[in-house]
Structures are given as structure tokens and as C-alpha cells.
Length: 541
Image 1 (spheres, helix red, strand yellow):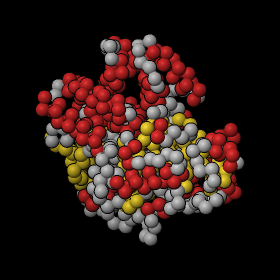
Image 2: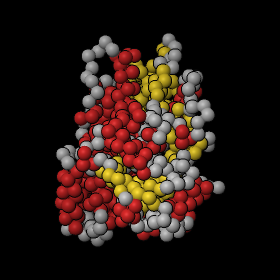
Image 3: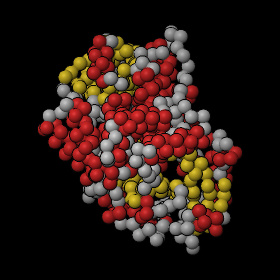
């Protein structure tokens, strides 16, 4: 993704489809359209995956709770998609057994849960060996002794998948680029171009130097997530159904403060369900689901959000005794749902919907991370129906396109590659679980990072490995600023704050050298990183 070259192409050529929005939905549409033979452009006003697509629960899951709302079609689609996305990137979409403790006075109870999970497995087409297994009270407590023994009545183990949402988005964009899509970040669509009352492109500002240019396209797609209605207003087409934004907050605590033995999905007294998911040195907890009317560009966790999750954990794991002081990091994201009169945030459907304006703007809203591929397929089908039905285009093929770093036939091969990488890293003085982290983030691409490390090794291998990852992010993944790397290319802002605190200045210095920044530019970027490190543990009132 050569940004400078792509900008020249954007300026000079006319595209079949121009996608506004570089989150998971826009990325999926770009890949689907490019793979079918359309000429594709994509613009993102911030960094890729900088909105909802880096702030989800980081699960490719079937939406078990949607069975309660009788959304069988949604459960069937996203449930079935889990296995497909896992096959496309087995290193990045990892099997995760989930424990579901059952209580007498919370949730559906033992028998209804058993039936519900059986339906869930059937709808999602889960393999026999991965289908739900019901547990007795004693079995449940042996899986997780920290649960309240006097309240647990049983439990269940069922299958889900864990991922890194931002990396999934970026890998899809990289593959779309390989298929010919012209992609750029920090390019803001600030207005629409019209020919005979129909949209024919957008006016763009390059946020790095404030230069402006125009991009022409036969069809423009608005895939901006929480910003969808803002673009519909710009197009004077926000009529009929509108967005209903809800906020989801997650907290990160050191693993030793909540040492759960596996991922747990548990009911809380107010009727919501919350995940506690161990991930290496931390456990993360979420999510909340509350109506949101604040700034879309600055979404943060409040003290009330954090206290709600802390209380929920302490109610379920009474020995944890978590406090706000235990929180190491956090994130907050928005769900761009379709408004339904009279429904609360948790009751709103997660179904996606496509809107077509009189001027031809195609907007997509709603949906879930897990369903990105089918959402994209529906949008591209719509685009072809509108403008390219006369062409002999390929059918959707994204279910068979291995993502960069993939190429594993089984998850066992992923683990074997991890063992081989660990041996190689140990010879370089890199210890701990770094091989696991690298394989999960990059898959087979981790080899490029280790080769760079071997060429640039000093007496500080932890720092050197981090800088090798930064090099990869700049060279192959269009990272332009330290936060692009620290947050969306590596996940370190959320999952390993101590490491970033140790090496923040070398990372900023590396970017400064690569991009030939002035001392003032370096200072400004360091301030932005330090502000972000503080913000993830500073809860607003």
C-alpha cells in the first residue's frame, strides 16, 4: 500500500467503486469488489480500523445472546461465518472454548441453555467435536474455582473464536491492495461531486499536508460505521431509518488480578452478559451497552462504565476484589445500529441494512465484526445490480481467499510454526511468549520481522523486536504515526502497556528517522503517544 503512488492514481483515474471508510466493513467491500474484477478505491479519514474496528470484544462469535431475541437468521449467518474466517486466517482467528456458568436466579437456567446451545450449534454448523457440552455444578467449579460455589448450578462449554479486530481489518485491506484496490489512509472525503444530480465522486483533503483533490467513481459507498449518518447529511439523504449509536467499553487488568482459567461468558444481575477473556499477561472484560450521543471522534470510557464492569466481575468472582486502580488499560467503541422505536440499547438488532439515496449514494450500517464478509457481498451485489449488471463479473470469492500470513491447513500447523519461531527467537535472546504474540498477529509474515531483527540485533532484544515490528508496520501496512503502530498494528496500547512505557521514545525516534521528521514533529508525536497512554486509564466523569 504505497500511499504516495496511490494518491497519484486516485487523482488521475476513474474508479468503478469508491468506498469511504477503512474499517472492517469498507475493507471487506474493497476486497470483494476487487476480487470480482471491479476497479476499486478506498479512503479512510483517520488510520485504518481507527473506529469501531479496533474497539470490539475481539471475538469472531455467533451472537449466542441473539437467540434470546429470536434472531435465528442472524445467528445462522454469523455462526456459520466463524469457521470460514478461521480458515482464511487460522493464526489470527483462534479457537476459544467458552465457559458459560449457569445460575438459579440469573440467565435462562440449565435446560433452556442446553436447548439453546444445541440450536446454536445446529444453526452455526458446528463440528461434532466442538459442539456444546453441558457441565454439572462440580464440573463447572473445577473449570473455574473462582466462581461463587453457593450460586452456581451448572455450566456449559461451547466454541467461539478470538481475534485481533484491527489486524483482521488491515490484513483484508492488504489483500484488497494486492488484488488491485487503490487504498489510502488520512484522506478525508469532505464533499460529494455530482453529474446530473447523481454522485460521481468525492472531493478529498490529504490530512498530512492539507492538499485537496478529486476522486471520480461510478458508484460511491458510504461504509463509515458510526459516521454513516454524517455522510448521509452531507449528501442531504438522511431520510427514513437512522443510526442508533450505542457504546461498548472494555477494561484490561493484569492476569494475576483476574486469573480465569479460560474465557468466560457470564450473566450479571441486570440481565446483560459479559465476557472475561484471558490473553497472555492480561485479562480483558466487557462489554457495556449504553446509548451514546457524544462526540463520535472522541469516545472514551467513563468512571461509571468502568465501575459497572468492576462491580459485575466482583459479583461473579467475589475473591477478585477488583478496583478501578487495577485497570491497566481500556477501550470504548461505538456500535452503528439501526434505530428501532421503543427498544433499549441491548434490544436493538445487530442486523445490517443497505440504504440507497436518490443521488446514488450507497450506505451500509448495522452488522457485526463476524459478519463482515457477507455484509460486503451484499453491498457489492447491490453495486453490480445498479451499475455493472451488463458486465460478466466474477461471483463473490472471499470465502476462499487466504489472508496475508495465513496458508495454514490446520490450527495444529499454526502451533508448530509457533514452536519453530520460538526456537529461532530464543537463539536471538528473545524469551517469553513473544513467538505466540508474533504468530497471532502476523502468521507466516512473522518470518520477515525475525529476519529484520537478525540484521539489526543489539544488546536489547526486546526493544529490537519492537522496532522490527514497527519497521514491518511502516514498510508493509501503511503505518504513518507511532499510534498507528502502537494501537492498530500491534495492539500494545491495550494489551501490553508496560512494554510501550519502557520503549515509547525509541519507537517514536524510529518513526522520526523513517519519515525524516523535524524535532518539533517528533516532540508533537511523542506528546500524542503519552496522551494516549494516559487516556486509556483516565476515566471521564
